[in-house]
Length: 315
Image (cartoon, rainbow, N blue to C red):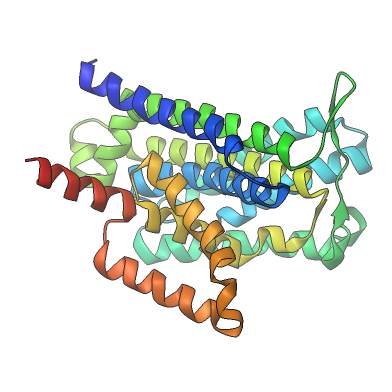
């Protein structure tokens, strides 16, 4: 492993850790802690989505469904089956990963817009289950989520969840960076560049696409569980189609194939709507125009484009 690779890997993780440690010194109120917490939670889901889209080159429009599975696991498990919340969270991630494995085997044989439509249908079906199975999920009104309690300590409040989500994001980024620089990560990038060429070189294309899809589902489920536990409730809107589109938009805006881009994209779509409330009824119009402008002038995403511009200036 080269020194440059080590510096890049540790630089990203240490930068995120520094951000998590420094932000509480400047955040003035619980409202800002909530925005930061939501940013970290969404960034965790987008980081997983970036593994399958940015590195493995596969389109997924159904990750809101996996996000919802994690959210409902920490609600349904304790409420109906007596499973402790701390156990329901990993079980939800395991269930999302298992579902991604079972569904991914057939649908990942598709390519392009066919794959996009298939994953979209998967996400919509999962959301429909949450809406219709009212005896377990509470139907359209949703259900409350018990607090996470460990050894008598209860996780509640924006500051507590700021640290939980922030440290989890740092750990997830470290895992993602190690994965990207491993043989599995190199296989992902080879598939992204050319599936036929990867197959000729001995890469098991179907296997590695499935690995990326399953890992991304697990990341999304953990993020969904965090959001449900933080809010103390969950509704089918957690897994709706627009949630999946939001994740894809975050990944593309921040930069596909960039760990930092996942965080920047999540921050962009979480913080900017709060800033644009000054426009009142025109808030969504301004937000849409800004997204269009970013895609026109920063086509590779915010982080990759800015990194390339800085590199050119230094050269």
